[in-house]
Image (spheres, rainbow, N blue to C red):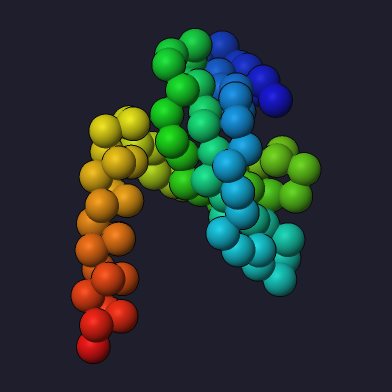
Length: 82
């Protein structure tokens, strides 16, 4: 999917998964997105049905995504030990 306007463009290069869906149909997703023709980043945000609108989200570089995975893995490992 490629969306463009004069100042901003994005392309979802890979859909990785849906975290949740609200009663109104918005889905919180993890995707790889290229913004303004740049290298794709990991992106976590809410999308309206059909992806016609996007909510605020978080973009992460590959290194940031790896660090987040390590932090979450450690957290859940510690929780399992309790």
